[in-house]
Amino acid sequence: MRRLSLIIFVLSVFSSCNSESGKSEKAVKIPAVQVEEKSIPEIPESVVFCGEKLELNDFESVERLHREFIINTYYHSSTLQVLLKTKRYFPIIERILKENNVPDDMKYLCVAESALSNAVSPAGAKGFWQFMPTTGEEFGLRIDKEVDERYDIEKSTKAACEYLKQAHRNFGDWSLAAASYNMGMGGVSNAMDEQEVSSYSDLYLNTETSRYVMRIVALKYIIESPEKYGFELSDSDYYTPVKTKYVNVSNDVADLMQWAKQNGTNYKMLKTLNPWLVGKSLTVKNNVYQIKLPD
Image (cartoon, rainbow, N blue to C red; front, side):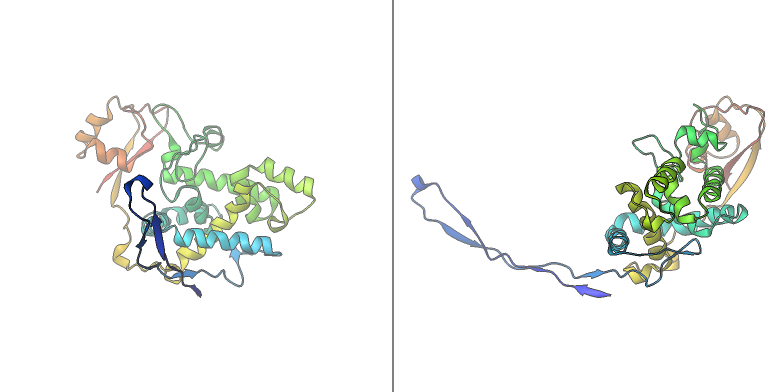
């Protein structure tokens, strides 16, 4: 990695006094300040995403990817929090991706979407996979005043798998499938038809989507080799999986606060472990819900 050492010297600052005071101008000396040395992260010589080589055919593609490496390497607070969460949430996501024959690298799409949290976007997308209400319902998630399964990591990951598989059937390419997760399948298809290109690397897209896949790829390489990018963590630093047990609920629950107490926990832990329970009651609707409780 190349080193870029920045030293800022401030020689002097002059302050002017009011001429009526009779005082002359004086130079105020400020000591030199040395800024911390920074490393310029290098991108891998060969970039692979979902088992497919990402072609970097021109300087624009290379520099766009390099930008995402720089941003996510030096976006310390966010990237560090993601790293700490990986051992808690990646095992869940990896298992569901594997069960649905979706490449393991798509877990980094989840990182790009939400930083492994139940985030809420200004546009109304929610959860680890940032589903909008209509798309979430289209892919089988219950979303109402009592239940919002966009906040259920297992169910939302399964829904994301269905979306990505459908997109891959349309495009035959996982990078384009990932781009469509941000832009929509119709948006990507229209852009490809208009520009008469067939690969993500040759496609001109809006700023957000053109950065999107590059951000996913940069996050993949940083998370896989954090020490290479300046993040030094020991095994004990990572958040560990939470030990839970499941209680099957097949009847309506009128008061989840009382239900939590009756089942040996409190409302705080019920909501923390089951953020998809957005109301204070639960209508089962001819289904069986599995509610997590501390084990």
